[in-house]
Amino acid sequence: MCGIVGLLLRDERLEPELGRMLVPMFDCMAERGPDSAGLAVFTRPLPAPLRRYSLHAAGQSMDWQRFAARLSEELHQPAQVAVRDNHALIECSLEPAEMRTWLAQFSAVRLLGIGRSLAVFKDQGNPAAIARRLGFSELSGTHGVGHTRMATESAVSPVHAHPFTAGEDFCLVHNGSLSNPYLLRRQLEAAGLRFETDNDTEAACRYIEWRLSQGDSLEAALHAALRALDGFFTLLIGTADRLTLLRDAFACKPAVVAETSRYVAVSSEFRSLAHLPEIEQARIFEPAPERVYSWSR
Image (cartoon, rainbow, N blue to C red; front, side):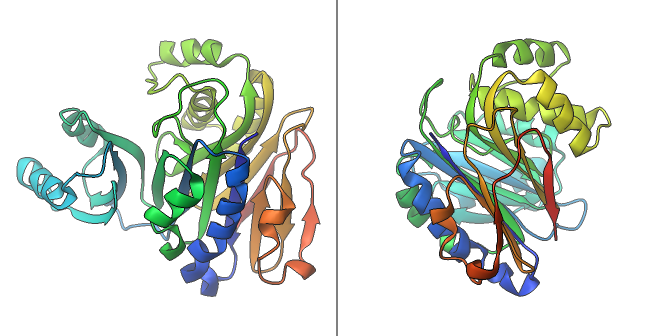
């Protein structure tokens, strides 16, 4: 099972409505994945050298304002923090390696994503309840990628929830199951990459981003993934300026796309798209297997 959703806004006037448009899609897919869920939202990029760090704390008692003040004091780094329950978005000029080193002292804090455009929220529990608690309907941005999970091959926990991220401004959600994630993991660990979970989707995410880091275009990286990934998958990828979709050769995991001049929407089922504006005029189609679909603003 599992459910995936994605929405890219071509009309900038819709950007304040991104969350309100995405939440009904997200809630509808809760039936496909009741265990955990997450949403990655992309905004217009922060100016360099600023980055946005998406953080999650186990439990809900974290004093994020004090946390950010301590970061600023200890690392002599001005930091802005935006809090959503047990999540925080911290904007500062720290390099990722510096941030990871400093965060290592906080056993309850997980780094969910890094980027100038990316913000990531994910947690364990009912997807609709997570969306309400974290205020997804209030989010604005240019595009977003979401996932509702029915766990089949690894633990149910916030860190095992999708989206998975790697590098900067890169995230992936996955409906399906891979049979060779440990082979990929060994290959990538030999190349110096580190893993945080035993989830098969993390292996796919890190493999594709690793190919990008080696100089591949996203399309070339995905064609390499078609050869490297063994199993069934529909992958939906968010990067700073686009949404990209790929299905395996058998395309047994569902996907549907609705495309208009104002937006592109992707879901596991059409019913989660039915509320979107002008859906009656949309070009609606099922993506073909082994073909890379990519949409930008």
